Amino acid sequence: MRRFNIASIPGRIITAIIAVACLAGSYYAMTTGLGKLTEARQLERLPETPVGALTTGPYVIAGEITDQLGTLETPYSKTEAVYYRYKLEEEYRDSDGDLRIRTLDSGARGRNFLLRDQTGPVTVAAGGNPDAAEWILDRTYRQQTGRRIYSEWALVPGHTARVIGQYSSESTSLNFAGLEDFSLPAMVSRNTLAADSGERFFDAAIRISIATGLLALGIALILPLVRIHRFWVYVLVMTFAVSGTLSVLGINKLRQEWSAIANLYEARYQKIDETSARSLVLADVAALQQLIRQSTSGWLDRWMFRSVVQNRLPVPELDEQTASIARSIVASQPVGRYQHAWTSRGLAVASIIAALLLLWLSIRTVKFKRLIEAVPTSSTRGLSFGLSELKAMVDVDDEHPPLRDPLKNEKCVAFDYKVEEKRGSGKNEKWRVIEHREERAPFWLEDSEGKVLVQPDGAKIEYPQYHSGRQALHRSIPRYLRERLLPGLCRPGSRSAGPAHHPEGRSLTLPDQR
Image 1 (cartoon, rainbow, N blue to C red):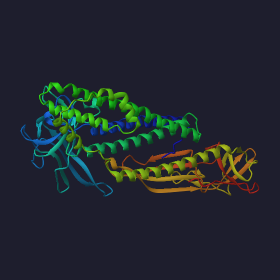
Image 2 (cartoon, rainbow, N blue to C red):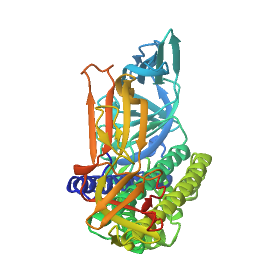
Image 3 (cartoon, rainbow, N blue to C red):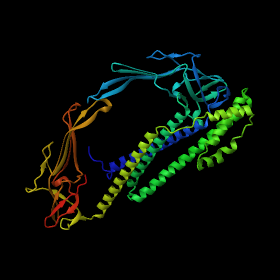
Image 4 (spheres, rainbow, N blue to C red):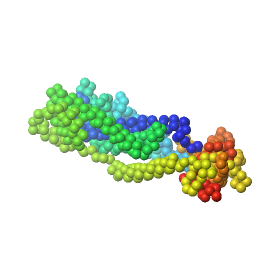
């Protein structure tokens, strides 16, 4: 494939498009990552509310699944369930003989079901749109018959589950609409609340890290386009861009998060006197108020709590029995833990090593660029000892004859020839190199004042001539890729740089840049 030239107009356009895509991807990854972080923090603040204390608004409840509203039959194991997800997969070997798995069929179905705890039952309205919630279930069935694999994830009567949803006092049911206003995920899970919040912490860390990397890449691509090549400028812009982006987006998200939890608390507090189960509702509100206060960790959280939430948390008056219930709710609240600790440490170490390597490569590249800019262009007569740059015509003679390229047998002084064949199938179909030849011969660079011999071995050659073709349209026929450096009329403005030998020897040896 022809080398990409960022200095050309098409190269600058493509680079600008890639830079904009990186910045857009960075913004998306950053906002979704902060969203996952907000959801994890909100899950730590919400107590598991007894079913008997439900009034109106978003809740986290836990209990046993019952079959009183009916069940569905799973397609493979024929198990009675209130929700299931299934997948049919098939093992196959690709054209390279590697064993792979593809999905033949998948889907999910659910229906309304009853969840019961010690204080009573509640209907979970999952039948209308089960895809509106995130279902975190273990695989309950797997069987392989021949090359086909049958899998199911089912929520069956008797299972204990945790549901995050919006309770409506009019329909006396829990649904999955409107939770985004409170920065909460719609969820049905068989995991602990700590595990679910920890998964979101890990997801948030991955997304924010990817966003930071894309932001750095976008800035690195934009600065050369606006002709800024100073390394210290890049470092300053990068520092301010990352810190500024995280600060602005993070503070806005934090303000939304605290405002949402304050709105949720006010809505529950206003319903205290409108319910018959006043003692349970009071205990739930008191537990929520205590968990909100406990979640203020760090100066930024404390500042946001004082400015947004503190005056909106009236403390309900509790008798001894209600206070005891509130304390038990708070005590049973699991502490979110960061999932995949060892995976995170491994990724962190790998990222640090990659960052140091890329930093070293970037500094090396900048130094080489400055070296090229610092070396003046000489004429053949003006060459001296040391590093030189020469702009002249490529020429050959009987003493240093040209090469013949293997594709069309035409004259050249250097060529890079590849034969590729398409292998694999579907998404795995790729071009594979089956033959590769690269040759170069000494040649003359000649200008109006004389000529000098160039020894190109070890040099990186930017080929001006590129050709790609196939002898047929059938996919099994190889394609041929050829790059050439021609003598004579090929490139009147050729540039060569390298340490010049003594002028009497009249030769230029190119340094190894591979």
